[in-house]
Amino acid sequence: MEVPKRIRTYCPRCRKHTVHTVTIYKAGKRRSLAEGERRYEAKKKGYGSKRKPEQKRTAKITKKQVLKLKCRTCGYIRHRKGIRVRKLTLGEAR
Image (tube, rainbow, N blue to C red; front, side, top):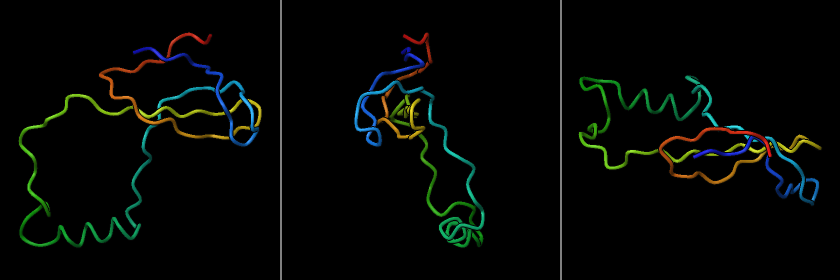
């Protein structure tokens, strides 16, 4: 699926429809000293490696791609709900 690089949509900070630049959201690097990460590491510790059994067969073949919209007037960034699609590409700006 092809998504335009610029979308005219509502900006909650400007309170009107403005042009937004579109990028694909990518999760950041996990912090090893975060409380949840430390708890997970402690649970994994011991004889076994994982705390839960790894799933053998995967049911879904696609991932939900989240769009990151940045307002070109005020710079406000927000995410648009994920679209379940096999391949998402950014196309020409309209």
